[in-house]
Image (cartoon, rainbow, N blue to C red; front, side, top):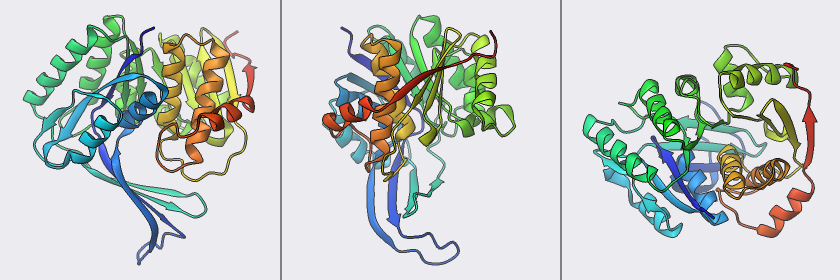
Length: 316
């Protein structure tokens, strides 16, 4: 069975995560624990997929000045490193996690990507197409890459019969939808941003997601934090409700869900099993610091407590 998958992180980041009692805006805040590691949505997905047993190829754009932590991680997870190096330093994103679970993200701009790097990236994609079926595009765009450019790459992969899982936000998500990726995974906030109005209820999510699916997107997966996951495929809705877990950090939970959905399909699990597996994986992610599958027994236990139920479609 094919275990090979490509994750694409156009705008990776070094994540500096600090845990503190409370963030004092405008004055000094003391951090109790900190962690500095290679990240970015696609990189997180790669880490989880590797832990699950996938052979991962990683690509995107990396700043040449501070690539050491990325190189170490790719070696550690046995990833095939196809990242294009560009001049400058990969951005640092600061995540401040307060005791009550509030996370403040301070995201810096990424490197500037030039035409030469774009050509090298397109060549890498072309070569990876030869022996890979699943491609995960995740995260924001660096300077020099337009939403339209990103959509063009999604379209190219889809036209070659690949399964593209697309997880982005704002303008990149809007443009990416026009390329009809095989799977998208907005959260309720990103969905609200997409339609320009606050979406909160299950009915509103159903309505918006069904409109999106009508354009030709096979899988619309909506992550709702503690409320669980909603998945629309072939005009059928499935909803997964996770058990209550002690939330340590929500960082990387959405990326873990994407990795779970991808792996479930790669392993030809049935629909209910895929959703249970991906939701359990995501629930486990919020109970730990850093992404990755750290305890297979805990995953099995969580899976047993996931409630799966159908939802009525509005278009019937």
